[in-house]
Amino acid sequence: MKKIFNIGIILAAAISLIVGWALITPYFTVKRVEFFGLRDIGENEIALPFHYGDNLLLLSTGFVEQNILADPRIERVKVRKRLPDGIEIFVVEKTPSYLLNCGEIWGLTKNGDAIPITDPRKISNLPLITTTQIYQPIPYKKVNEPSVLRALKFANKISDENPSFLDKVSEIISRENGEYSLFLVQNGIEVALSDKSENPLEKLNVIMNGLGTEEKDVVQIDLRFPDQGIVRFKKGYKENKPSSRSS
Image (cartoon, rainbow, N blue to C red; front, side):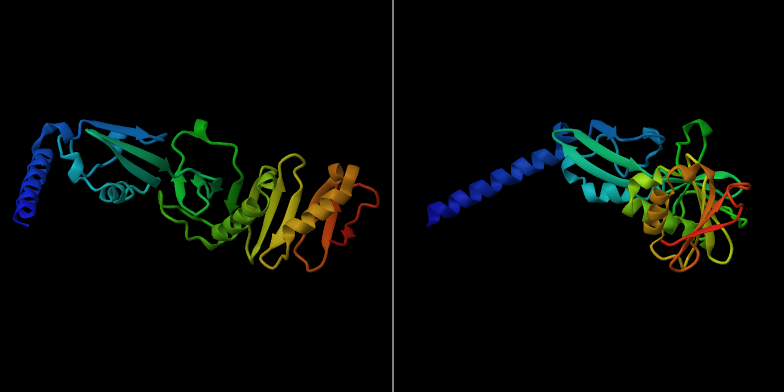
Protein backbone atom coordinates (compact mmCIF):
# COMPACT_ATOMS: atom_id res chain seq x y z
CA MET A 1 0.00 0.00 0.00
CA LYS A 2 2.85 2.33 0.88
CA LYS A 3 4.46 1.51 -2.46
CA ILE A 4 1.30 2.45 -4.33
CA PHE A 5 1.09 5.70 -2.37
CA ASN A 6 4.67 6.57 -3.28
CA ILE A 7 4.01 5.83 -6.93
CA GLY A 8 0.99 8.15 -6.81
CA ILE A 9 3.11 10.94 -5.37
CA ILE A 10 5.69 10.46 -8.09
CA LEU A 11 3.05 10.53 -10.83
CA ALA A 12 1.43 13.65 -9.41
CA ALA A 13 4.79 15.36 -9.24
CA ALA A 14 5.59 14.35 -12.81
CA ILE A 15 2.24 15.64 -14.05
CA SER A 16 2.78 18.93 -12.19
CA LEU A 17 6.17 19.33 -13.81
CA ILE A 18 4.77 18.60 -17.27
CA VAL A 19 1.88 21.05 -16.80
CA GLY A 20 4.21 23.70 -15.43
CA TRP A 21 6.54 23.23 -18.37
CA ALA A 22 3.65 23.42 -20.85
CA LEU A 23 2.47 26.70 -19.37
CA ILE A 24 5.85 28.43 -19.53
CA THR A 25 7.51 26.90 -22.58
CA PRO A 26 7.49 28.97 -25.79
CA TYR A 27 6.67 25.75 -27.64
CA PHE A 28 2.92 26.26 -26.99
CA THR A 29 2.75 30.02 -27.52
CA VAL A 30 0.66 31.50 -30.34
CA LYS A 31 2.81 32.06 -33.41
CA ARG A 32 0.31 31.48 -36.25
CA VAL A 33 -3.19 32.89 -36.78
CA GLU A 34 -4.92 31.84 -40.01
CA PHE A 35 -8.24 33.25 -41.27
CA PHE A 36 -10.59 31.46 -43.64
CA GLY A 37 -13.72 32.76 -45.38
CA LEU A 38 -13.03 36.50 -45.24
CA ARG A 39 -14.36 38.44 -48.23
CA ASP A 40 -14.76 42.16 -47.50
CA ILE A 41 -13.31 42.31 -43.99
CA GLY A 42 -9.54 42.58 -43.62
CA GLU A 43 -7.72 40.33 -41.17
CA ASN A 44 -6.36 43.38 -39.35
CA GLU A 45 -9.94 44.67 -38.85
CA ILE A 46 -10.93 41.78 -36.59
CA ALA A 47 -10.32 42.44 -32.89
CA LEU A 48 -8.82 39.36 -31.25
CA PRO A 49 -8.88 38.86 -27.46
CA PHE A 50 -5.34 37.43 -27.41
CA HIS A 51 -1.85 38.28 -28.62
CA TYR A 52 1.00 36.51 -30.33
CA GLY A 53 3.05 34.91 -27.59
CA ASP A 54 0.06 34.02 -25.39
CA ASN A 55 -0.09 30.42 -24.25
CA LEU A 56 -2.27 28.46 -26.66
CA LEU A 57 -3.30 25.91 -24.03
CA LEU A 58 -4.85 28.62 -21.85
CA LEU A 59 -6.96 30.15 -24.62
CA SER A 60 -10.70 29.41 -24.66
CA THR A 61 -11.96 29.00 -28.23
CA GLY A 62 -15.50 29.82 -27.05
CA PHE A 63 -14.31 33.12 -25.54
CA VAL A 64 -12.48 34.00 -28.76
CA GLU A 65 -15.61 33.22 -30.82
CA GLN A 66 -17.82 35.41 -28.60
CA ASN A 67 -15.44 38.34 -29.00
CA ILE A 68 -15.25 38.01 -32.77
CA LEU A 69 -19.05 37.75 -33.04
CA ALA A 70 -19.27 41.16 -31.37
CA ASP A 71 -18.35 42.52 -34.80
CA PRO A 72 -21.77 43.19 -36.39
CA ARG A 73 -20.41 42.36 -39.84
CA ILE A 74 -19.87 38.71 -38.92
CA GLU A 75 -22.64 36.09 -39.10
CA ARG A 76 -20.85 33.01 -37.74
CA VAL A 77 -17.36 32.04 -36.58
CA LYS A 78 -15.55 28.87 -35.58
CA VAL A 79 -12.15 28.85 -33.85
CA ARG A 80 -9.83 25.85 -33.69
CA LYS A 81 -6.47 25.32 -32.03
CA ARG A 82 -3.71 23.77 -34.09
CA LEU A 83 -1.04 22.53 -31.71
CA PRO A 84 1.59 23.41 -30.96
CA ASP A 85 1.33 27.11 -31.90
CA GLY A 86 -1.49 27.84 -34.34
CA ILE A 87 -5.08 29.13 -34.33
CA GLU A 88 -7.50 28.76 -37.25
CA ILE A 89 -10.46 31.15 -37.51
CA PHE A 90 -13.29 30.31 -39.90
CA VAL A 91 -15.51 33.33 -40.58
CA VAL A 92 -18.84 33.74 -42.37
CA GLU A 93 -19.54 37.39 -43.11
CA LYS A 94 -23.05 38.79 -43.31
CA THR A 95 -23.98 38.98 -46.98
CA PRO A 96 -27.18 40.26 -48.57
CA SER A 97 -29.84 37.93 -49.94
CA TYR A 98 -31.76 40.91 -51.34
CA LEU A 99 -31.21 44.53 -52.27
CA LEU A 100 -33.14 47.27 -50.47
CA ASN A 101 -34.20 50.44 -52.27
CA CYS A 102 -35.12 53.11 -49.72
CA GLY A 103 -33.86 56.13 -51.64
CA GLU A 104 -30.41 54.55 -51.87
CA ILE A 105 -29.40 50.94 -52.40
CA TRP A 106 -28.52 48.72 -49.43
CA GLY A 107 -28.04 45.01 -49.02
CA LEU A 108 -30.56 43.09 -46.90
CA THR A 109 -30.06 39.71 -45.24
CA LYS A 110 -32.83 37.15 -44.78
CA ASN A 111 -32.87 38.13 -41.10
CA GLY A 112 -33.45 41.78 -42.00
CA ASP A 113 -29.97 43.18 -41.32
CA ALA A 114 -29.05 46.19 -43.46
CA ILE A 115 -25.70 45.80 -45.25
CA PRO A 116 -24.02 48.93 -46.67
CA ILE A 117 -23.11 48.72 -50.36
CA THR A 118 -19.72 50.41 -50.61
CA ASP A 119 -18.85 49.24 -54.11
CA PRO A 120 -21.73 49.14 -56.65
CA ARG A 121 -19.64 46.84 -58.85
CA LYS A 122 -20.02 44.14 -56.22
CA ILE A 123 -23.82 44.29 -56.20
CA SER A 124 -25.15 40.88 -57.12
CA ASN A 125 -28.17 40.31 -59.33
CA LEU A 126 -30.49 39.99 -56.33
CA PRO A 127 -34.23 40.67 -55.99
CA LEU A 128 -34.88 44.30 -55.12
CA ILE A 129 -37.17 45.22 -52.23
CA THR A 130 -38.49 48.77 -52.61
CA THR A 131 -40.30 50.75 -49.94
CA THR A 132 -42.41 53.81 -50.68
CA GLN A 133 -41.74 55.09 -47.16
CA ILE A 134 -38.86 57.40 -46.26
CA TYR A 135 -36.42 55.23 -44.33
CA GLN A 136 -32.74 55.36 -43.38
CA PRO A 137 -31.25 52.01 -42.30
CA ILE A 138 -28.55 51.65 -39.67
CA PRO A 139 -25.56 49.63 -40.92
CA TYR A 140 -25.63 45.99 -39.78
CA LYS A 141 -28.74 46.56 -37.65
CA LYS A 142 -32.13 45.00 -38.23
CA VAL A 143 -34.54 47.03 -40.34
CA ASN A 144 -37.60 48.14 -38.37
CA GLU A 145 -39.67 49.70 -41.15
CA PRO A 146 -42.95 47.69 -41.32
CA SER A 147 -43.30 48.04 -45.10
CA VAL A 148 -39.85 46.55 -45.63
CA LEU A 149 -40.44 43.75 -43.15
CA ARG A 150 -43.71 42.85 -44.88
CA ALA A 151 -42.01 42.49 -48.27
CA LEU A 152 -39.05 40.70 -46.68
CA LYS A 153 -41.38 38.16 -45.09
CA PHE A 154 -42.92 37.39 -48.47
CA ALA A 155 -39.50 37.16 -50.17
CA ASN A 156 -38.35 34.71 -47.49
CA LYS A 157 -41.53 32.70 -48.01
CA ILE A 158 -40.66 32.37 -51.69
CA SER A 159 -37.08 31.46 -50.81
CA ASP A 160 -38.21 28.72 -48.42
CA GLU A 161 -41.03 27.26 -50.51
CA ASN A 162 -39.72 27.69 -54.05
CA PRO A 163 -36.11 28.96 -54.20
CA SER A 164 -35.89 28.67 -57.98
CA PHE A 165 -38.88 31.00 -58.38
CA LEU A 166 -37.02 33.73 -56.50
CA ASP A 167 -34.61 33.92 -59.46
CA LYS A 168 -37.58 35.05 -61.56
CA VAL A 169 -38.33 38.01 -59.28
CA SER A 170 -36.78 41.36 -60.15
CA GLU A 171 -38.49 43.61 -57.59
CA ILE A 172 -40.96 43.61 -54.72
CA ILE A 173 -42.53 47.01 -54.02
CA SER A 174 -44.11 47.39 -50.60
CA ARG A 175 -47.07 49.74 -50.82
CA GLU A 176 -49.48 51.24 -48.29
CA ASN A 177 -52.48 49.47 -46.72
CA GLY A 178 -50.75 46.09 -46.64
CA GLU A 179 -50.42 45.79 -50.41
CA TYR A 180 -47.32 45.12 -52.47
CA SER A 181 -46.33 44.31 -56.04
CA LEU A 182 -43.99 41.65 -57.33
CA PHE A 183 -42.38 42.12 -60.75
CA LEU A 184 -41.11 39.17 -62.78
CA VAL A 185 -37.75 39.30 -64.55
CA GLN A 186 -38.33 37.95 -68.05
CA ASN A 187 -41.70 39.45 -68.92
CA GLY A 188 -42.07 42.37 -66.50
CA ILE A 189 -45.47 41.13 -65.32
CA GLU A 190 -46.69 42.79 -62.13
CA VAL A 191 -48.21 40.47 -59.52
CA ALA A 192 -50.46 42.45 -57.14
CA LEU A 193 -50.63 41.01 -53.62
CA SER A 194 -51.80 41.89 -50.15
CA ASP A 195 -51.17 40.66 -46.63
CA LYS A 196 -54.47 38.77 -46.94
CA SER A 197 -53.51 36.87 -50.10
CA GLU A 198 -53.84 33.12 -49.47
CA ASN A 199 -51.40 30.67 -51.09
CA PRO A 200 -50.24 33.30 -53.61
CA LEU A 201 -47.44 31.16 -55.05
CA GLU A 202 -49.77 28.26 -55.77
CA LYS A 203 -52.31 30.55 -57.41
CA LEU A 204 -49.63 32.27 -59.45
CA ASN A 205 -48.20 28.98 -60.71
CA VAL A 206 -51.66 27.80 -61.77
CA ILE A 207 -52.35 31.03 -63.67
CA MET A 208 -48.89 31.19 -65.29
CA ASN A 209 -49.13 27.57 -66.45
CA GLY A 210 -52.51 28.29 -68.02
CA LEU A 211 -51.48 31.39 -69.94
CA GLY A 212 -49.44 29.69 -72.64
CA THR A 213 -48.62 32.07 -75.51
CA GLU A 214 -50.83 34.76 -73.96
CA GLU A 215 -48.17 35.36 -71.30
CA LYS A 216 -46.35 37.88 -73.50
CA ASP A 217 -49.42 40.14 -73.53
CA VAL A 218 -50.04 40.12 -69.76
CA VAL A 219 -49.24 43.24 -67.74
CA GLN A 220 -50.67 42.30 -64.34
CA ILE A 221 -51.89 39.32 -62.34
CA ASP A 222 -53.98 40.49 -59.41
CA LEU A 223 -54.09 38.09 -56.44
CA ARG A 224 -55.46 40.48 -53.84
CA PHE A 225 -58.94 39.02 -53.84
CA PRO A 226 -60.05 35.71 -52.25
CA ASP A 227 -60.49 32.64 -54.46
CA GLN A 228 -59.58 34.31 -57.71
CA GLY A 229 -56.81 35.77 -59.81
CA ILE A 230 -57.44 38.60 -62.26
CA VAL A 231 -55.27 38.71 -65.39
CA ARG A 232 -54.98 42.11 -67.09
CA PHE A 233 -53.64 42.31 -70.63
CA LYS A 234 -51.86 45.02 -72.58
CA LYS A 235 -53.95 47.84 -73.96
CA GLY A 236 -55.54 46.79 -77.24
CA TYR A 237 -55.25 43.06 -76.57
CA LYS A 238 -58.40 41.23 -77.71
CA GLU A 239 -61.43 42.94 -76.21
CA ASN A 240 -59.18 45.34 -74.27
CA LYS A 241 -60.68 44.51 -70.89
CA PRO A 242 -59.64 42.61 -67.75
CA SER A 243 -59.93 38.84 -67.92
CA SER A 244 -60.76 36.91 -64.76
CA ARG A 245 -59.36 33.46 -64.20
CA SER A 246 -60.23 31.13 -61.35
CA SER A 247 -57.20 30.05 -59.34
